[in-house]
Amino acid sequence: MRLHLSIHLDDGTEVLSSFDDEPLDLRIGDGTLAPGLESLLLGLTAGTDGQMLADGAAVYGVPDPALIRTLARADLPPDFRFVPGLVMLFDAPGGQQTPGTLLAESDAGVEVDFNHPLSRRGLRIRVRVLEIA
Image 1 (cartoon, one colour):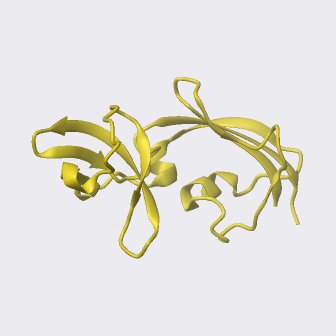
Image 2 (cartoon, rainbow, N blue to C red):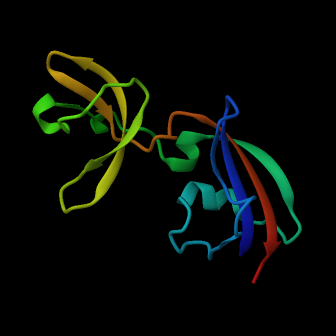
Image 3 (cartoon, rainbow, N blue to C red):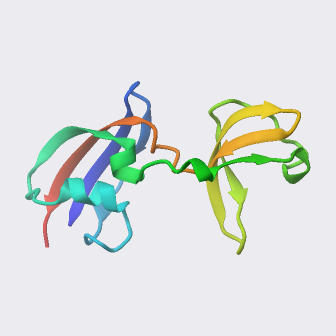
């Protein structure tokens, strides 16, 4: 499948768009897109150009309260500055990086939500299907 895709938050903020760039080439199930996002593409045909509203939890998974953690200040970079709602990358075990959303700060440390940053948001998704192979 070859397509253009954009995702906007419910407040209009653009999160991702391929419309001003090269189209995406993918096969459903290849891991290019989140499974919930892929499910929105099922049944679309070449020439489809439309928008849909989606709940972030349906697209990226229901937030798991166990993925909200308080990190000690000693575990944060020396130049760390708290900005509520900021999404930043954190080093995870195994050397990968994972995004976390900064929620709150206290004497105990910084509360970070490691659920997908879009899982708690309303989304407007636009797709233009160029080709189905």
